[in-house]
Image (cartoon, rainbow, N blue to C red):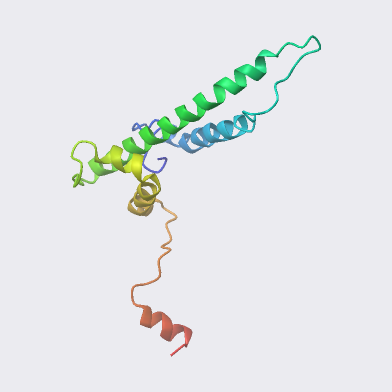
Length: 146
């Protein structure tokens, strides 16, 4: 999202704001992961008088809602990012006209992230190809296997 010039909500922003996208997303996931360490099935915290402390009930109730909100945010951000890339590069929808981006983000998010990475990796100034050259015979000869 950062190299595309998008905010954490997948909206186009100036370059200065886009530089903060990674940090924002990182802290969103970090806070959710730290918050999820509170076990839902943990025994409640009880004070000296035998009353439940409100923090126990509050955390046990809030944790599933935060996880659901994070899941919704991930799907929407991925949908908008994919739509942004398709619009910029004039890539037409081939399946599910009108909701292809949502379907890809919802049903195959790992594939969608990999596709976006492959498609946008050349925008990175430090891009180094990770795939071997297509001429494998040249590689074999260079290594001296033949």
